[in-house]
Length: 369
Image (cartoon, rainbow, N blue to C red; front, side, top):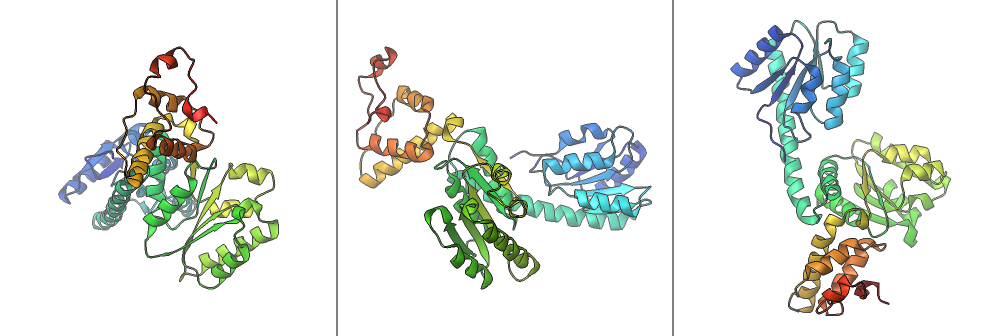
């Protein structure tokens, strides 16, 4: 995780104002960083920064609204307090819609400002602590060294702390269901879980009945595009009804094999349903698109198989790992697991074959029938 040694970022083109704010923060025991060029402000924050931004609205180099959008693109949860001497109701409404947590007109009331800063700072710190705790657990569950799997870990850590609907899509056996299960487990272990696989023949009517009779938890569902338009619209109405009922919370984790936006374009997915469930999205790349994950996953599955079969863990030659890395893996993680299981019982070996590999006369065992 990235670290930043200040908890309040002050952004204003007026140096005198910045000095006043910095002094106010200092006497209150808060560390602050002053930025008089808003075009550089975004360089000083990151998604795991446990701090608050104080932002002026009118600056010659960049309008505060533009910088607010950039900050929210880094992490929508970063608290931003807007301070302006030329505020009006439409501007305040626009700022709040973009994600500002407070909108304050000058002259400011120092005690009131400090109270607001500390309140939002405490909430932000609590959120980041939770996120980092969840991230540590996720890191142990989602194996791999690729940039893609690291990004997925970050997404799961973020969505696990929110009661939002999430879309997970990617090729079959790429790890979609495992990520959905992990996301559910990272939310709250005690909440209900319902796993519905429409493509395997699970009954939509039974699921719909559960939603109508007080289900409260996370619903993992795959194959939504197989439902007819009428049933998709029925699901939209049920989810909207739950949103209006403050006593219940349902987090829908939807799994697709292809990009759901394409399904909307193909009229296989009702737009209203897509926009409702697309509050977060995780794209799971195929295994061949993240070769840095192949060796860690292979070793993990190999250890699992050897432990299960009470066998000694065999040595894996680097040349064989290179072959695995170059393979296309059309069966994704499921295919890799099968190869590891075969290796554990001695079906796949490279002993004495390295020279043949160099001469390109040897057919890799995983390609044999």
